[in-house]
Each structure stands twice: as structure tokens, then as C-alpha cells.
Image 1 (cartoon, rainbow, N blue to C red):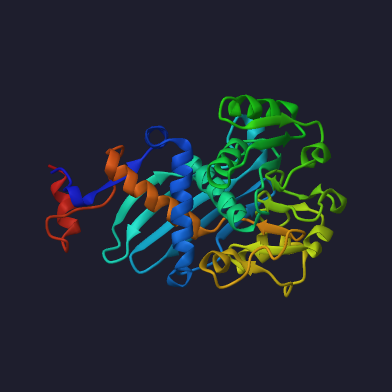
Image 2 (cartoon, helix red, strand yellow):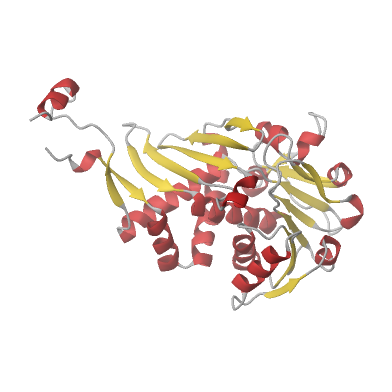
Length: 347
């Protein structure tokens, strides 16, 4: 007997996700996710929150990121394995689920490798929107891998970015990023050092991949008035910024119990003051205080951002019909007779 419609779970495949993005438009998709993040951050207190559950190995990490409010539950499975590229594999892969709190039934299962790139870029742009100096038009982008183009396009769409200055230790990554950004209305400058990339930039984004304590930015590279999006330090033992930069900066985070374990601030004392970004978005805390202040968004990614992205995709999947129905849930005629359903299948 075929399953009923209520037992079929819509699945958004990688192909579906790409079709949805092209139908909506990449910049518009990122903007829509950014708007959902801001909406959910304004109702921060309505969510269950916990640091993500992580399983570490010498080569990478696998994480589960859950959250819920009174209507929906969501989780994301995601890995981070920087050495994967040597074997032709992605550094980050992910999938996620959105479920109904009243019934517990899944509403959507989705790929999240592409979606994570979109929401990470959206989150960076939301932070810059609230923290970057007024009129910022130039970004230095240190680390030109899989996230680089999304970061640039998000900053252009949401913050009015005009110029991106690129640097990566691998010149081929920079060339790839510059080629991909050609024709998108951005002035793209390939640089031969991090110091050169930072010249004239008001926004500085670091998104490197190596799982190690690293100093991508030294203290003398960061001048007054800059906004830093540090998105590459995202697990214990992995950082990008010199400790002295943190002491000179007003630090903003997503969820401080998680960021103190995984972010740049793992280098600092546990009582070092930080502000959670939702407070700035909700108007209960100040963002940038003056033009000379250095603001730092120490971003490690948080489950509420994935929740926001999944609910956007859930809406778009229903609008476009771009899903595959999965026979994921048992659906006996009598909810108490799961055994009978199994036995009848023998015939």
C-alpha cells in the first residue's frame, strides 16, 4: 500500500537547491535569508539554545546543531575537514531538517552544503550592516576558498560593497574567486599579500580553513575604524587573529557559551566582555560606538541561523514545487498497529 501524503517528507536535493537559487536569484536568496535571520534574532528569547554537539578527530569535526521554538524544531548535521580538498572532497558538507513541534513530523529534509554557504554569507552581511563604519565600500577578503564568492555577493547586496580585495596563500584560489566574481558589478583586486589586501579596506573578512591556531592577522595589520568578520575560527584549537587584536576590539558574537569554546575568544579569559549580536539587532545593546572603534564579529555559526535558512527554503520549496517526496515515515492504517503493517507487506 503506498504511503499517504502525510507520511511523505519533502526533500530538497542539491539540484533542487540550485534550481531554487537560480529561480529566486543569488543575491535575492541571500537577502531573504538575511531578513529571516534578523527576524529570528529579534525573537531570540523564544528559542531553545545549546552549543552544538561536536565530535572531533585530528583531521576534522562533525557537528550537530539543534534549536527550536514553540512552532518548529530544526537541526543541521555538518562537518569540517580541511584536508578533504586534497582528495577532491568538500571541506564542509551538511544536511538539515525542519519539523513541526506539535506533531513531531518532519516538514522538510534538505541539503545544506550550499545552504550553509548562503546563510554564512548572509550572517556576515547582517553583522556588517549593524557594525561596519558608515559608508563602507571596500572589503579585504583573506581566504578565497568555497565561501569567498558568497561573502562578496552578500556584502554587495546587503551593505552596498563596491570593491573586494582578495588574498589567499594559494594564488589559484584567488584567481578562481576573481574569475567567478567577474561581471557581478564589483571591482575585484587580486593581491599578493594579506597586508596589500587590507590597504584601503573598511571591512575585513577572514575565512581560512586550516584546523590550527593561526595568526592570519597580526596586530599591526588592523587599523582603527575597521570592522572584522572573523568566520574561519570555528572549533576548539582553530583561530585566525592575533590575541592583541581582540583586546583592541569591541567583540560581538552569536551565542557566547558556544563562541567561548570555538571562536577567536577561546584565546581570552572566560569573563572577557562580549556582546551577543541579537542584542544589537533587537536594539537592546549598542553596536559601533564611534568611527575609530574596531568592531569584531567573532562568528562560528549558530543553529538559529540554520533554522532561519531552513524556513526560507521550506517556503520556497512549497512555492516552486522543487522537492522530492521521501517515504521516510511509517504510516500504518492503525497508528497502534505497526507490526500489522510490517506483516501485511509480506504479501
